[in-house]
Image 1 (cartoon, rainbow, N blue to C red):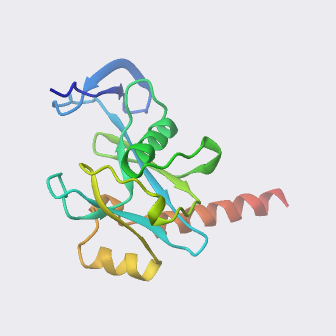
Image 2: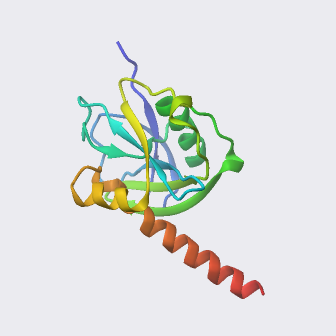
Length: 176
Protein backbone atom coordinates (compact mmCIF):
# COMPACT_ATOMS: atom_id res chain seq x y z
CA UNK A 1 0.00 0.00 0.00
CA UNK A 2 1.35 3.41 -0.98
CA UNK A 3 1.47 6.05 1.71
CA UNK A 4 -0.25 9.30 0.76
CA UNK A 5 1.87 12.23 -0.36
CA UNK A 6 1.41 15.45 1.57
CA UNK A 7 1.57 18.98 0.21
CA UNK A 8 1.74 22.30 1.98
CA UNK A 9 -1.48 24.32 1.87
CA UNK A 10 -1.17 27.93 0.70
CA UNK A 11 -3.55 30.86 0.99
CA UNK A 12 -4.75 33.09 -1.84
CA UNK A 13 -1.65 35.28 -1.40
CA UNK A 14 0.67 32.29 -1.82
CA UNK A 15 1.63 32.15 1.84
CA UNK A 16 2.02 28.77 3.52
CA UNK A 17 -0.75 28.26 6.07
CA UNK A 18 1.18 25.79 8.23
CA UNK A 19 -1.30 23.07 7.32
CA UNK A 20 -0.73 20.10 5.01
CA UNK A 21 -3.01 18.33 2.55
CA UNK A 22 -3.00 14.62 1.67
CA UNK A 23 -3.00 14.36 -2.14
CA UNK A 24 -5.97 12.75 -3.84
CA UNK A 25 -8.41 14.11 -1.24
CA UNK A 26 -10.67 17.10 -1.84
CA UNK A 27 -9.22 20.46 -0.88
CA UNK A 28 -11.22 22.88 1.22
CA UNK A 29 -12.44 26.09 -0.41
CA UNK A 30 -9.84 28.83 -0.02
CA UNK A 31 -6.97 26.34 0.15
CA UNK A 32 -4.32 26.28 -2.57
CA UNK A 33 -1.49 23.94 -3.48
CA UNK A 34 1.72 24.39 -5.46
CA UNK A 35 2.57 22.62 -8.72
CA UNK A 36 5.74 22.93 -10.81
CA UNK A 37 6.51 22.47 -14.50
CA UNK A 38 10.14 21.85 -15.43
CA UNK A 39 10.96 22.61 -19.06
CA UNK A 40 14.27 21.52 -20.56
CA UNK A 41 15.29 23.81 -23.40
CA UNK A 42 18.39 23.07 -25.47
CA UNK A 43 20.79 25.23 -27.47
CA UNK A 44 18.93 24.34 -30.69
CA UNK A 45 15.69 25.89 -29.37
CA UNK A 46 14.05 22.51 -28.76
CA UNK A 47 12.08 21.47 -25.70
CA UNK A 48 11.95 18.04 -24.13
CA UNK A 49 8.46 16.55 -24.23
CA UNK A 50 7.46 13.40 -22.37
CA UNK A 51 4.52 11.13 -23.10
CA UNK A 52 2.28 10.45 -20.10
CA UNK A 53 1.60 6.84 -19.17
CA UNK A 54 -1.75 5.75 -20.70
CA UNK A 55 -3.28 4.92 -17.30
CA UNK A 56 -2.70 8.41 -15.86
CA UNK A 57 -5.01 11.39 -16.17
CA UNK A 58 -4.21 12.86 -19.60
CA UNK A 59 -2.62 9.52 -20.47
CA UNK A 60 -1.16 9.40 -23.96
CA UNK A 61 -0.66 13.18 -24.11
CA UNK A 62 2.69 14.98 -24.29
CA UNK A 63 3.90 17.34 -21.56
CA UNK A 64 6.95 18.68 -19.80
CA UNK A 65 8.09 17.19 -16.50
CA UNK A 66 5.63 18.35 -13.85
CA UNK A 67 4.17 17.53 -10.48
CA UNK A 68 3.01 18.64 -7.09
CA UNK A 69 5.42 20.19 -4.62
CA UNK A 70 5.57 18.08 -1.48
CA UNK A 71 5.27 19.36 2.08
CA UNK A 72 8.45 21.06 3.21
CA UNK A 73 9.84 21.54 -0.31
CA UNK A 74 10.39 24.81 -2.09
CA UNK A 75 9.10 25.21 -5.60
CA UNK A 76 12.56 24.68 -7.07
CA UNK A 77 13.24 21.65 -4.87
CA UNK A 78 9.99 20.16 -6.16
CA UNK A 79 11.02 20.77 -9.78
CA UNK A 80 14.43 19.18 -9.21
CA UNK A 81 12.81 16.15 -7.52
CA UNK A 82 10.31 15.71 -10.37
CA UNK A 83 13.14 15.77 -12.92
CA UNK A 84 15.02 13.08 -10.96
CA UNK A 85 11.90 10.95 -10.58
CA UNK A 86 10.35 11.24 -14.05
CA UNK A 87 13.35 11.40 -16.37
CA UNK A 88 16.19 10.27 -14.08
CA UNK A 89 18.24 13.45 -14.46
CA UNK A 90 19.79 15.49 -11.66
CA UNK A 91 20.26 19.22 -12.00
CA UNK A 92 21.37 21.88 -9.57
CA UNK A 93 19.55 25.00 -8.49
CA UNK A 94 22.05 27.00 -10.61
CA UNK A 95 20.68 25.26 -13.72
CA UNK A 96 17.20 26.71 -13.19
CA UNK A 97 15.47 30.01 -13.79
CA UNK A 98 11.87 30.88 -13.04
CA UNK A 99 10.10 31.29 -16.37
CA UNK A 100 6.55 32.07 -15.30
CA UNK A 101 4.27 32.02 -12.27
CA UNK A 102 0.48 31.87 -12.34
CA UNK A 103 -2.64 30.97 -10.41
CA UNK A 104 -4.85 28.31 -12.01
CA UNK A 105 -7.99 27.72 -9.96
CA UNK A 106 -6.79 26.59 -6.55
CA UNK A 107 -3.28 25.77 -7.80
CA UNK A 108 -0.26 28.05 -7.73
CA UNK A 109 1.92 27.08 -10.70
CA UNK A 110 5.63 27.79 -11.10
CA UNK A 111 7.19 27.13 -14.48
CA UNK A 112 10.92 26.48 -14.33
CA UNK A 113 13.37 26.61 -17.22
CA UNK A 114 16.47 24.43 -17.45
CA UNK A 115 18.78 25.23 -20.37
CA UNK A 116 20.14 21.71 -20.70
CA UNK A 117 20.20 19.12 -23.45
CA UNK A 118 20.79 15.59 -22.23
CA UNK A 119 20.73 12.93 -24.91
CA UNK A 120 17.58 10.83 -24.92
CA UNK A 121 19.78 7.81 -24.20
CA UNK A 122 20.81 9.46 -20.89
CA UNK A 123 17.23 9.63 -19.62
CA UNK A 124 15.86 7.02 -17.25
CA UNK A 125 12.10 7.32 -17.63
CA UNK A 126 9.89 6.44 -14.67
CA UNK A 127 7.74 3.74 -16.32
CA UNK A 128 4.57 4.38 -14.31
CA UNK A 129 4.71 8.09 -15.23
CA UNK A 130 6.40 8.47 -18.61
CA UNK A 131 6.52 6.12 -21.62
CA UNK A 132 8.55 8.18 -24.14
CA UNK A 133 10.54 11.36 -24.51
CA UNK A 134 11.57 13.45 -27.49
CA UNK A 135 13.09 16.81 -28.33
CA UNK A 136 10.80 18.99 -30.44
CA UNK A 137 11.38 22.32 -32.15
CA UNK A 138 8.95 25.22 -32.02
CA UNK A 139 7.15 24.20 -35.22
CA UNK A 140 6.62 20.59 -34.11
CA UNK A 141 5.54 21.75 -30.65
CA UNK A 142 3.02 24.12 -32.23
CA UNK A 143 1.70 21.35 -34.46
CA UNK A 144 1.40 18.98 -31.48
CA UNK A 145 -0.52 21.64 -29.53
CA UNK A 146 -2.76 22.41 -32.49
CA UNK A 147 -3.51 18.70 -32.96
CA UNK A 148 -4.53 18.29 -29.31
CA UNK A 149 -1.58 16.05 -28.45
CA UNK A 150 -0.28 18.15 -25.53
CA UNK A 151 -1.70 18.40 -22.02
CA UNK A 152 -3.59 21.73 -22.13
CA UNK A 153 -1.61 23.18 -19.22
CA UNK A 154 1.60 22.71 -21.25
CA UNK A 155 0.64 24.53 -24.45
CA UNK A 156 2.14 27.98 -23.79
CA UNK A 157 5.87 27.32 -23.41
CA UNK A 158 7.09 29.55 -26.25
CA UNK A 159 4.72 32.34 -25.19
CA UNK A 160 6.24 32.23 -21.70
CA UNK A 161 9.74 32.25 -23.23
CA UNK A 162 8.91 35.35 -25.27
CA UNK A 163 7.42 37.08 -22.22
CA UNK A 164 10.55 36.34 -20.20
CA UNK A 165 12.87 37.50 -22.99
CA UNK A 166 10.90 40.75 -23.37
CA UNK A 167 10.98 41.32 -19.60
CA UNK A 168 14.72 40.59 -19.48
CA UNK A 169 15.37 42.98 -22.40
CA UNK A 170 13.43 45.78 -20.67
CA UNK A 171 15.31 45.15 -17.43
CA UNK A 172 18.64 45.31 -19.30
CA UNK A 173 17.65 48.55 -21.05
CA UNK A 174 16.93 50.19 -17.69
CA UNK A 175 20.38 49.25 -16.35
CA UNK A 176 22.28 50.71 -19.33
